Image (cartoon, rainbow, N blue to C red; front, top):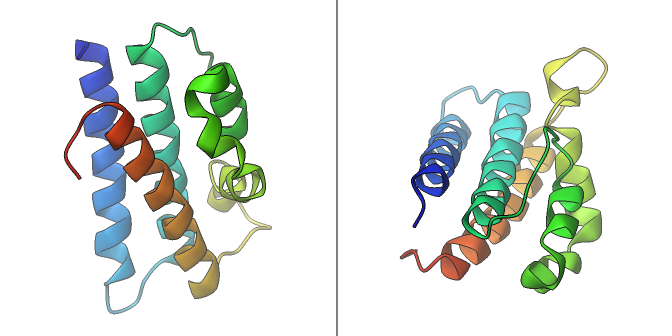
Length: 127
Protein backbone atom coordinates (compact mmCIF):
# COMPACT_ATOMS: atom_id res chain seq x y z
CA UNK A 1 0.00 0.00 0.00
CA UNK A 2 1.23 3.49 -0.85
CA UNK A 3 2.26 5.74 2.03
CA UNK A 4 -0.22 8.42 0.97
CA UNK A 5 -3.03 5.85 0.87
CA UNK A 6 -2.20 4.82 4.43
CA UNK A 7 -2.27 8.47 5.49
CA UNK A 8 -5.75 8.94 3.99
CA UNK A 9 -6.92 5.82 5.83
CA UNK A 10 -5.48 7.05 9.11
CA UNK A 11 -7.31 10.37 8.71
CA UNK A 12 -10.54 8.57 7.74
CA UNK A 13 -10.33 6.34 10.80
CA UNK A 14 -9.86 9.43 12.96
CA UNK A 15 -13.09 10.88 11.59
CA UNK A 16 -14.84 7.55 12.14
CA UNK A 17 -13.66 7.44 15.76
CA UNK A 18 -14.84 11.01 16.40
CA UNK A 19 -18.28 10.20 14.95
CA UNK A 20 -18.59 7.02 17.00
CA UNK A 21 -17.45 8.71 20.21
CA UNK A 22 -19.76 11.70 19.73
CA UNK A 23 -22.69 9.46 18.85
CA UNK A 24 -22.43 7.86 22.31
CA UNK A 25 -21.86 11.12 24.19
CA UNK A 26 -24.46 12.21 26.78
CA UNK A 27 -25.41 15.21 24.61
CA UNK A 28 -24.35 14.40 21.02
CA UNK A 29 -23.58 17.18 18.57
CA UNK A 30 -25.54 15.86 15.59
CA UNK A 31 -23.95 18.25 13.09
CA UNK A 32 -20.50 17.10 14.16
CA UNK A 33 -21.41 13.44 13.77
CA UNK A 34 -22.70 14.08 10.26
CA UNK A 35 -19.66 16.14 9.31
CA UNK A 36 -17.16 13.54 10.49
CA UNK A 37 -19.16 10.70 8.91
CA UNK A 38 -18.97 12.55 5.58
CA UNK A 39 -15.27 13.19 6.10
CA UNK A 40 -14.66 9.50 6.81
CA UNK A 41 -16.37 8.44 3.58
CA UNK A 42 -14.61 11.17 1.59
CA UNK A 43 -11.17 10.21 2.88
CA UNK A 44 -11.74 6.51 2.23
CA UNK A 45 -12.71 7.32 -1.35
CA UNK A 46 -9.61 9.47 -1.71
CA UNK A 47 -7.49 6.63 -0.27
CA UNK A 48 -8.89 4.29 -2.93
CA UNK A 49 -8.20 6.79 -5.71
CA UNK A 50 -4.70 7.42 -4.40
CA UNK A 51 -3.92 3.71 -4.28
CA UNK A 52 -5.04 3.32 -7.88
CA UNK A 53 -3.14 6.34 -9.15
CA UNK A 54 -6.25 8.31 -10.03
CA UNK A 55 -5.77 12.08 -9.81
CA UNK A 56 -8.25 13.84 -7.58
CA UNK A 57 -8.93 17.48 -7.00
CA UNK A 58 -10.16 19.23 -3.90
CA UNK A 59 -13.79 18.28 -3.57
CA UNK A 60 -16.25 17.13 -0.94
CA UNK A 61 -18.65 15.65 -3.52
CA UNK A 62 -18.66 11.94 -2.76
CA UNK A 63 -20.35 10.83 -5.95
CA UNK A 64 -17.86 12.82 -8.00
CA UNK A 65 -15.10 10.85 -6.27
CA UNK A 66 -16.91 7.59 -7.04
CA UNK A 67 -17.24 8.69 -10.67
CA UNK A 68 -13.50 9.28 -10.88
CA UNK A 69 -12.93 5.60 -10.05
CA UNK A 70 -15.11 4.50 -12.97
CA UNK A 71 -16.08 0.83 -12.87
CA UNK A 72 -13.72 0.13 -9.97
CA UNK A 73 -16.39 1.26 -7.48
CA UNK A 74 -19.46 0.05 -9.32
CA UNK A 75 -21.39 -1.06 -6.20
CA UNK A 76 -21.13 2.47 -4.80
CA UNK A 77 -22.76 3.87 -7.93
CA UNK A 78 -26.00 2.37 -6.65
CA UNK A 79 -25.72 4.62 -3.60
CA UNK A 80 -25.96 7.85 -5.60
CA UNK A 81 -28.80 9.34 -3.53
CA UNK A 82 -27.19 8.35 -0.23
CA UNK A 83 -23.83 9.79 -1.26
CA UNK A 84 -25.48 13.04 -2.38
CA UNK A 85 -27.19 13.40 1.02
CA UNK A 86 -23.97 12.66 2.87
CA UNK A 87 -22.01 15.12 0.70
CA UNK A 88 -24.14 17.98 2.04
CA UNK A 89 -22.59 17.49 5.46
CA UNK A 90 -19.07 18.06 4.15
CA UNK A 91 -19.61 21.80 4.16
CA UNK A 92 -23.20 22.80 4.90
CA UNK A 93 -23.36 21.25 8.38
CA UNK A 94 -20.58 23.56 9.51
CA UNK A 95 -22.58 26.72 8.81
CA UNK A 96 -25.91 28.19 9.90
CA UNK A 97 -28.93 27.14 7.89
CA UNK A 98 -28.43 23.38 8.06
CA UNK A 99 -29.12 21.54 11.26
CA UNK A 100 -28.80 17.81 11.71
CA UNK A 101 -30.79 15.73 14.16
CA UNK A 102 -30.43 12.21 15.53
CA UNK A 103 -32.08 10.65 12.49
CA UNK A 104 -29.73 12.49 10.10
CA UNK A 105 -26.73 11.45 12.20
CA UNK A 106 -27.82 7.81 12.20
CA UNK A 107 -28.30 7.91 8.44
CA UNK A 108 -24.93 9.62 7.89
CA UNK A 109 -23.19 6.98 9.99
CA UNK A 110 -24.91 4.14 8.12
CA UNK A 111 -23.87 5.53 4.73
CA UNK A 112 -20.32 6.17 5.90
CA UNK A 113 -20.15 2.66 7.35
CA UNK A 114 -21.07 1.16 3.97
CA UNK A 115 -18.44 3.20 2.13
CA UNK A 116 -15.86 2.45 4.83
CA UNK A 117 -16.50 -1.31 4.77
CA UNK A 118 -16.48 -1.49 0.98
CA UNK A 119 -13.25 0.47 0.53
CA UNK A 120 -11.50 -1.40 3.36
CA UNK A 121 -12.40 -4.67 1.64
CA UNK A 122 -11.23 -3.38 -1.74
CA UNK A 123 -7.91 -2.32 -0.21
CA UNK A 124 -7.48 -5.67 1.52
CA UNK A 125 -7.85 -4.30 5.04
CA UNK A 126 -9.42 -6.25 7.86
CA UNK A 127 -12.78 -5.02 9.05
